[in-house]
Image 1 (tube, rainbow, N blue to C red):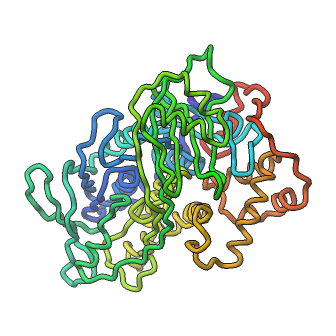
Image 2 (image 1 turned 90 degrees about the vertical axis):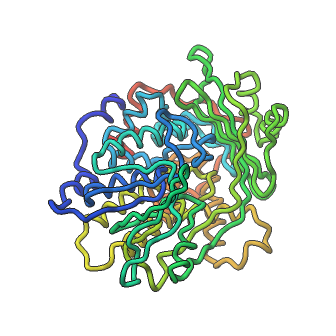
Length: 496
């Protein structure tokens, strides 16, 4: 079966189609979305069938082609559409994955196509594994933007920023936003029945709410101090291509705090990102970049790029912490307002969860819009968004804590310490056991919750089965990929 044809063929009626069918002849008035990134675009898409108009307010001017924009500084670094993110995006925008492939995105079989050095050692290259798609963030966001903004009910105000929320007449909710044109510096009020803040890590929602007399949210965080440096390289032609497609060399905290990733992306390029944690910042000089790559736990990534042709300067990006804003816990919440995406839960980018969580959350928002309930919509959306980010936060923050010295980790529940020790056993077993490897990949790809690792088959293999010694060098490729193997994997993960 051909993956490209399958992704562009007739699509099942998923939640997005159900939402469109459920939209009434007299939809709600106007919705406003703050931010035109992935979370904002997908939110606008699910709002459109339910509102007479949707206005997206964006600080940047949106580029006409897939290219960098200032409001998405992380786009110059490695991104992945994880398994559940891929499924969710295809459900929201049927055919979008086929469009990405036509534009140069690369389908991958994980771990069959990967040199994957986990904290416990090298993973065997089991086939078939998890079907994922690798593309630049610029291409993914641009492709989504083209689809979403083609809807006649969605408009974008570019080079415009939100400066405040407008309170409702009864003081119990939000009735719109105040915006300022960044060129003319003129302000205007935009009334709205619903405002969704998707403005990212730098969200000002807490300040806006405080100005209206609402309680600021709790903001638990983990100070990871993650620093990226990345650049594009020319990908080798087919005659000189290695037997792998991607490299992931993970950290091994607390001793090894450096990692690196090489991904094939659109444009016949490699995207290479080097990462340091806890203040171990990778340098941006030519010599320093290569030396940092050579210092990773294995030299295979360094060996791949030392003779490769660079296509870009070296770009840097820093994330001080992982942060979660607990708006859903507030006893009082303004009707007509909700916060989603990175504005709600900003995760360590090392785990590549951001775009996938945005797609999963958009599906959840669409479901809430289609529900008949007497409970306030803003509160319902806020709670669903919090649930969508709960497992990714548990995975990311649990791993982030490994990088902190004990006196900074705080008191941890006993079950959390036990789970972390057990997860170490799972990682060791996953390197050589195909069943454990598949179960682990489902968790990392957000297709199963972390506690799915306690299923009997995984428990038995992780705790009782004698484990083979870890490989000391990158494993060789398994059986050659048959023409249909990755397509069969795509079917198994739900991408049709």
